[in-house]
Length: 166
Length: 83
Image (cartoon, each protein chain N blue to C red):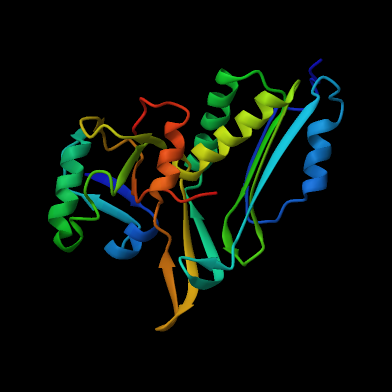
C-alpha cells in the first residue's frame, strides 16, 4: 500500500548535515509494503591522490541541481518498481569524515532497491551539477585545487546503458 | 546579447561568473563556444567540447548544434564531480 501522506521522493540540497536514523525512519513509517531499504552514504576522505585533505568545498548550481537529481530519480523509477527514494546532497565547506551525500531506496524486495541505489549514485556523480574543491597539503605547503572528473565515474554509467556515451 | 553563467574551475579561470557575449539571438551553442574561445584565447582548451559542458534552462545539453536565445538561461561548467 502506498501512503498518501508521505511523498515518495525526498530530494534535498542543503548545507546542513543529515541524520541517518531520522531518514531511515521516514522511509519506513506507514510503509509495510516495502521489505527492503538500501542506503548509501558518501563521506569526505582525508586523503586524495596521495595528498592529505583538510577541507572540501562543494559548489553547486542552485535550481539545476534539484532538477537534475529529480531527473535521475525519475529515470530510476522508469527502470524499477520502487517505493520511497531519498536523495540528500550537501554543499559548502566540509571536512574529513563529514557526510556528503545520502541515497536511500525502498522496494518490496531487495534487488530493485540495491540496483536503484547504485544507479542513482552512479548518475549523481557525473550528471548533477556539483563540483568539489579540496584544500590539501603537499610539497608546496597548503593549496586549493578543483577535483578532476574521473574516467571511472563516467565508465560507471556505461554499466547501465552500453550505448550511452554522453 | 547572450548571457552565460559560469561555474566552478571555469569561473575561477575566466574570472567571471556571468559573461555577456555580443551575439545575435538565437545563437547555436557552437557559436557561443567559439566566441568564448576567442574572448579567452588562453583558456580555449578548457572551453573545448567535452571539457566545458552547456546547460540550457538548467538541462544538460551535449549537442552543440542546439540553439539558445537571449531569454534562455545558458550555463557553462566543467565536468561534474558530485557524490
